[in-house]
Length: 275
Image (cartoon, rainbow, N blue to C red; front, side, top):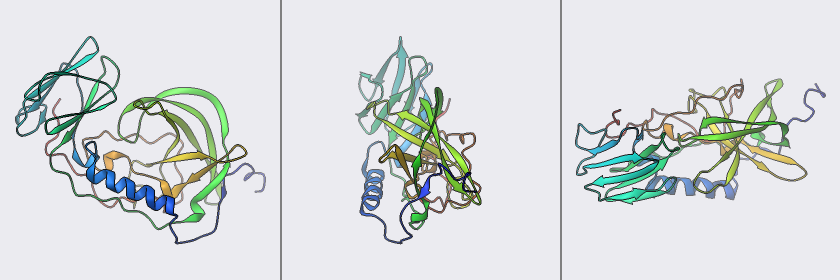
């Protein structure tokens, strides 16, 4: 058993119900963002490929929205907005506010996607399992030959991610290696080491498709994995978002009762977008 656990991320700290100030601040900032941000998932109305064009407006539009009659088109990789919201070019990977809506264009030319925000804000607040310091692990990351794949991120956007290694964590009487991907934020070019995992609480206390958690570098080539910071994908807040598929192999058999909970079905936008 000693040999099996060699290189395993080890439990850091002692059990305590005291939530660290940094975690309190992180959760408070996230709750404030949900209730105030123009691109909060609580006001996401549609997440749709632009294709031959998107109509926002009357009931028969791709994206119904009262008081608006606008179209979004792509031509030679350039995205344009016209209609009751005015005429303008929409940049990629930057939030643009236009009238009662906020628009975010993502994807690559020919495969562009628009996320539409606006209207009444859904009433949801994140809830969390009690703090469990036994679910904070520190240890090395086993590197792999980097390979790039397309994945869905926490906000449902498709992006290139590079598999950079794996970390071992306890899973009952043995251990499991969780795959780690480096995911670049298209808007800022910053990158995080990310793990998307499922466990025994998936669909039984946490979101069924899984949760995201970041791997933080510490010292001497080691990394910290704090399951108390695990978060739900945005599809847990609104069915406008596509949900990431579970990553192969990243499923623990034990219950990880730490991080964000899930106690309800995702709320639907006012009306789903139509293809």
